[in-house]
Length: 431
Image (tube, rainbow, N blue to C red; front, side, top):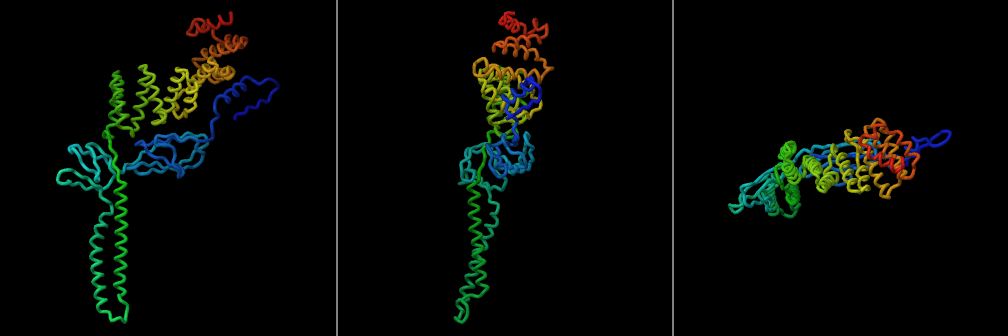
């Protein structure tokens, strides 16, 4: 809650009223931070302070308390990346992590059917964990590739040592038992030690076999639709088609990139650009679907605010003022190039539409428009803001205030782009 105190001699000044109005319609900036986590490749899991957070990257962590946080970003087949970050109250931070691969891409194309660790695998590309692999033919025909357990050499050594040690210790035990006259222990300390060592090696062998089985059971290969290295060339090719005006070809390449390379950051850019292109071509539903998917599933810090702003405009065009305001409220203003005046004016238009539809109050809209005039006194759209404020005041029956605002319009407004609106307003007022 925001309180404004004014110490004076009489009425509440106009500026204080504007501040109160802004506090009423704009949520106060929370002391909670926002952390925007991005990884390359995408799809990594996030842990903050030992707790799993949200979905997979890219992901926006909202309402994070200020202070020092330990962030882990990890994905199967890649090294876990750990970061310690200190966030100030209200800070917006981007954490962009490049994951180091612990995997490689392998392709088998000349086989009609092959086995990967005794499982059927089709021809194509697979992402396999780093390690050693054995390849052979099953029945002399089908190719079979099997991961080699990292400690297999120890198992092989134990398979040689244990039988020899067991046989040797057993022979010594029989010999000592045959020569024992009953006056001493059945077995000498040396033989007992040999049996203990044999049992220990047998236990180690069992443990290694169990660990190898867990390794084999957890082994997984990720099928790939295309070579990941093609993502960047695909995006560049799509941009070239777009620059040449071949829009259908560009959309086709962007679509291929999104579908075939969903874990590449270029897929995020492709989805956003496809949405912008659809909007330019007048395909409103397709544009909204792409932009919505972008902000919900594949956001990038450099494009997130622009996408939310474009969604807000589309919602406003469709008459959904609540969705428009929700998109504006979700903006993080990480991108310094985003025009705050454009955002504020769009919010004002949404409030104006709500007022005219009867779902919003005129007083709040009037206060917001007065705030625009105060915040952007040198704006190129200042006359538009003044005329809009005058129209709202007239619609609210506040004729005297409307006339005062109209008198602030320059004389050439009668002949400029606002002339028709100004004429209709004068007719409404009988002036």
